[in-house]
Length: 336
Image 1 (cartoon, rainbow, N blue to C red):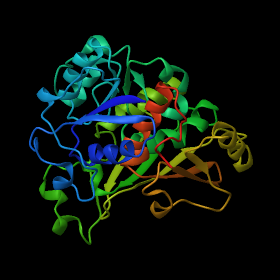
Image 2 (cartoon, rainbow, N blue to C red; image 1 turned 90 degrees about the vertical axis):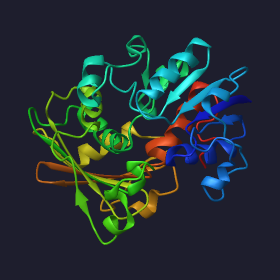
Image 3 (cartoon, one colour; image 1 turned 30 degrees about the vertical axis):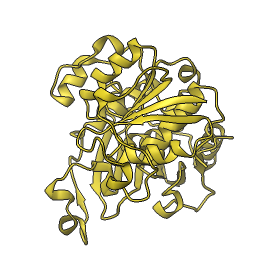
């Protein structure tokens, strides 16, 4: 049994995390923080939430704490992580603060100096299925973004397997439910703006998730600048569906590609490669920690459709999955 704390428990990912950890047989929630709602019960903020009284971060008791989840804005998360790591608490950060290895790249995309550059080289990028060995001894884990998880799980086999055509452009056409934008009020997220609507934003090479994707794709062998990322806002509460177009190298056909994906995800508890002719939907994955992948090949173009729940496999569920590996628990614990 381990003691965990959740910093920022009233946002969508924080609340989802509390729900998952409350049913985890190996976890005791020591505290959950909120600056705006300190002193209130979490159920006063989110209906059907576990009976937990929220505290301010300054009142969180760190003695005996084994792990902490940071569901905080970028900048604030890094500053909190420094304090926790120095006390021997293992940290899983759901913000963007430790996803990029280079402080200058972080400054370019997030518009601020990195608060803890000394920790960047230590942080383990927690794309669980491709990070297990490093996760086991990690003190600090950077949980991937939700769009990023859907795209990277879909692309890793074809990129690492050298099936991508040299110099080709990969297009990731992604759609997310509105919880992916967080809980902070904004006009474009209001019901009257979202309902009966469907919109694109920050298309091409302008979204903050782009360098995070390219960092991993480069690790697997892709050249810089090969990815075009076009996100869209769906008029639904949750879920991400990404359709990714990948030009194939000569000699690759659907049978070879399917064998590549089958080998990459054989035995994975939370990645499902669908049978030929089947494509995933949000209904298939929402409220679960599953990422479902559908594969089709048209000529020399591979089309991968990737679906997941942005709050679970794209955020809090993957964070719990990472924690399970870090502490030697069964990977499915708390997630099924």
